[in-house]
Length: 194
Image (cartoon, rainbow, N blue to C red; front, side, top):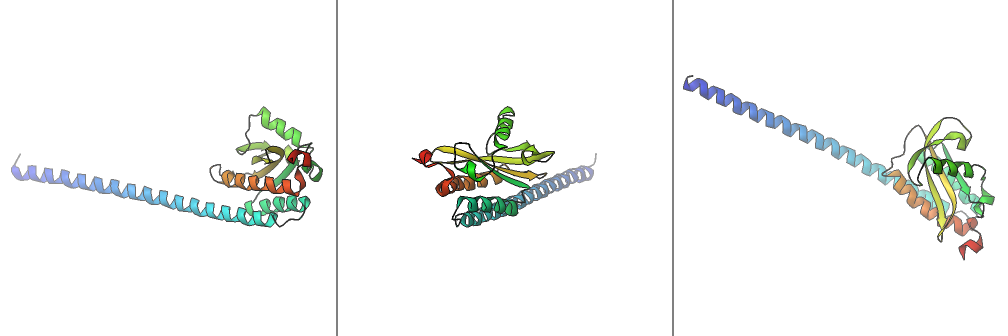
């Protein structure tokens, strides 16, 4: 092989290697840009979610009665989070049970227990809980205050799923505040508070 042919072959290999490295760098940059874009969308979604829950918390805290607070929670969560249904149930020994219907609570808790479903986790719930057919993606939270669980808040989302990493974290914070606020409005019997 002549020296010029050998030089051309070596030069072609170098150019090919440089091109390949350039392509890999461009692919990595595209992947990083896509990841950054997804991260920015998640940050914006979280900011909107937090603002929505903050506004709803302030609205509910303007309620003067337990009944008003329950209506505000149900309507506010439905409107702000495109929920199909919001149910609040009270334990039989809590005053909340007098303010909300409780007939489905036993069935719902039995369903959770038999299917090893956890509070605060996104789950598939039978819509018989809401008097319909099919399956809802949903999330259930305990209402509690002063170390006493006295009710359940169940959110039904329909076909779209909750974002378990973000939505349920913010919702749990909202439920923690609402649990104390509803108790202050009379959701707990005085004997359970003392």
